[in-house]
Image (cartoon, helix red, strand yellow):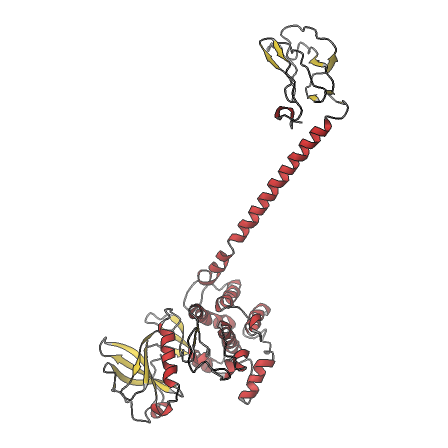
Length: 459
């Protein structure tokens, strides 16, 4: 907590019972120095741990302000904060009872001021500055929510802007006094009992619903962000019942153009203030990611702690969608493969169906059917004066299998074979070979329809 001493009026009030005075010893080890914070239930003292020789803050419930649930409330705060390890959440070291039978909490001593004190002094903040201050708070709340802890009393008074020894700024959530711990049954969670500060209560809290979740804290942070920019909460009324009715029924006044709020940021903020929690941001992480994205679009790369927005917020959002493009690529690849296979199948069917058609002649290609022989006519002498090849041998072609000769040489069908002069080059066909030549002997083995050799995709 803050180490700034209290004003005289607060100091007199805190010492009114004369039970705790500067220099007093609590539990034989905590030496009281000076009050630094005051509330309706108790006082926060700057103290010194005599055993560890270290400063700390001691939160005491005053005897004259105790009620039936005060001890349970303070113990609940101690348990909730003690199990959390996050830079944006105040650390709790100890819990116990004083010699006057009053409960106390020992926690880290903070240097700085609350967000309420900053707003009282400045009036309002620019939208970007307010978001940069609240993003670490949203990250700390995400840690608490992951452990089943809901604060339920977030407000500028419970957000502390702490300064470290190096001059850095670290916002922290304090006062988990009415936090709801998942699975815990205490008098603090009774249906119909209002817990929290009315101006920051969600509609479900205003209705007295006992079953609250993390979206109640999302609502409260949205209200704090609204107030930080506008200088006042979204709803104000002369009485508590009128204020709760406005929270439940009325829409928040539009603040586009105020403090740098544009339509995109207003849309993000409006979703945080949705009356139905089903329409709200589902988590503090989702809310923070949207706000961090808005800052990045305005060329702001970090929060007030200096943490990178892309590292703290946007990288996790991108990695969660990393598998989706790969799945689309796989589906696209399978689609292309299927298309290629379909084209090949169509080509094969077209080849087979073409075998039942009559022979046709196109340019230099001759297609014939029937058990006849095809051979190339002699070529001019100037075609290839160097290479000397053996003359082609006649081959028997099945009538059901068309043969396509795609050579530049003219083709002429003959009824009887006749010898050719040696040294003439053979005609080369691009179709499936119908015969093999081996040392001047022709192999006339027929190619059966449907065999692998009979399927030619060359043309």
